[in-house]
Amino acid sequence: MKEYIINGGKSLSGSIKIGGAKNVALKAIVAACLTNEEVILNNVPVISDVYYMLEMVQHFGGQVIQDGNTVKIKVETIVNTKLPLETAAKMRASSLFFAPFIIRNGNAEIPNPGGDRIGARRIDMHIDGLIKLGVDINYRNDGYFYATGNDLRGAQYRFNKNTHTGTEQMILASVMATGDTILENCAQEPEIDELIELLNMMGANIKRVQNRTIKIVGVKNLHGTSYTIKSDRNEAVTFAVMSALLGGKIWLRDADTEHLASFIEKFKQAGGDLETNSNDDLRFYIKDKILPVDIQTAIYPGFMTDWQGPWCMLMTQAEGESVIHETIYEDRFQYVGELKKMGAKIELFNPEVANPVDFYNFNYDDCTPETKHAIRITGKTDLNNAVLMMHDLRAGATIVLATLMAKGESVIYGIDQIERGYEKFDERLKSLGADIKYINE
Ligand code: EPU
Image (cartoon, rainbow, N blue to C red):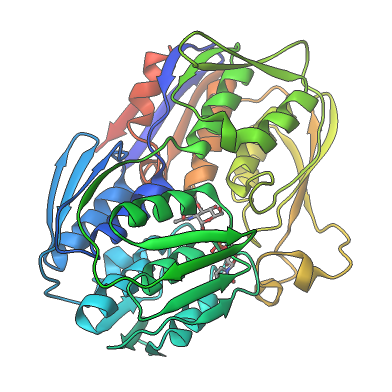
């Protein structure tokens, strides 16, 4: 059983390097499997989600050399197009292996993907899109999608809602199709642009031709390359809020403000500010006091769903009431019960929405009356120490943040969740002066 023991209530200071983006690394690994030449990926975070993806690559015959944050992948031939159920089902990104398997071997057996338990997270649009490209797919009740396709043809496909990995699925699958593919109503998340950049460096021909439209001109072959993954905007927000709440003295190295605009806007409204030093490091701090500010999560360039947990922590320290309305996932408030144990005043509710089916990005039919889409936070509350459990990655970071703020000793279970997405989280927190012990026995 793994656990963190955290003695909170101390201010933190120092400098922290923001790692490479998890949600780019996972897709870059899949892209690397589209060629038989070597692809070198730099700035890959050492996290368990990456480890599981690489384990799958080795399972189907790929050669993987991992040296710190550099990963070399060479998949000369794919010898097995069935992903192992247990590993693949843990991760939503595993569903992206449809592309290399179908393109190179003509068939794929892919488990219905899991990932974080943050709602039903269907892949219906991925499947519809793949069918449009000429893939034949059947779902059997053993938990697998069975797909075949020998001659993928470019097509026109319109996503009916924003889907980040769905857009990536279609880009990966159409990159070597015969003819052109036009994807409409595509997601604009910057992680997708990095995937496009990498694939183009491998010889693909992919362009965002207009807002939310991507054109892929199929090419015959892709080749090896070397690509450096940019920094993770979720990790940046986690450390930005940590700095703001714990003394304002943490410098973030390699954080990219470009994709943090919607966070920075709200942060400033809430009484926060930031400064840059001569190395372009960022320091987030509170000017005077934290003010209550409502947020509604949104697709890019809006306030990202992954940032709402840290935002909730900030709002527990604001005088007055604030609301977080989650519109991307139907069920992403798993951390609320844990924060309540620590004394936070948070109420779950469903706001009045005129046309929820269209308004929400998730599939509204997946909701039950118990599923709540918003929280109302009343501050300011001092948090007390507690014994806690993390249920998903971002909720995990939120809970760690809460225990760092609370005076006294807290114990957190479910550390596997944080290890999915934050490299050496405990060691990095220690370097900032946190009193944190990692127990693994
Ligand atoms: N959806 C469908 N059908 C589909 C595809 C999506 O109903 O075919 C729904 C989902 O159920 C969800 C919503 O649409 O409610 C958004 O899904 P989307 O496909 O946009 O996102 P995702 O693939 O589930 C990725 C990241 C998430 C990040 C979101 C938003 C990866 C592996 N995951 O998720 O990251 O929150 O985009 O940018 O890239 C995380 O890192 O902890 C994480 C959850």
